[in-house]
Image (cartoon, rainbow, N blue to C red; front, side, top):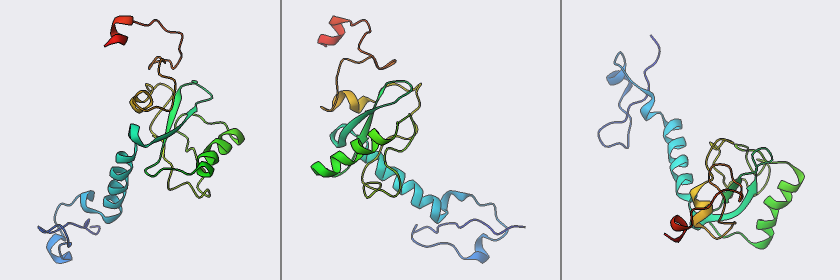
Length: 152
């Protein structure tokens, strides 16, 4: 028998004693490392909104725009760093925009779950950082436009 997973008590602030959970069915739901990861993911989720959109990069494979987010306003110098990085390296969907050794690594985010098959992100259209008349499926401006829908 392996050690049981940690289980939070009723208060949610402490873990139950080993003697209480030993021999019972447990799950990884209360593992400290997983809770920390979930909290970080939730925090990043609030960053990935139109109001936090800072820049746009284009995937070299699908040519769709990808939004770069930051919770705090970036200085002009900080705004130039991702652009400099992107001119040195080619960006493709799902790759991090900033290398881990860069000072902006913990301040600038992109949706990493995006693939070339994904639609263009909604914050791209609702922020003021990019061209608005792009097809959300293919990312080009050569699609048919329904003028009635556009008026709405």
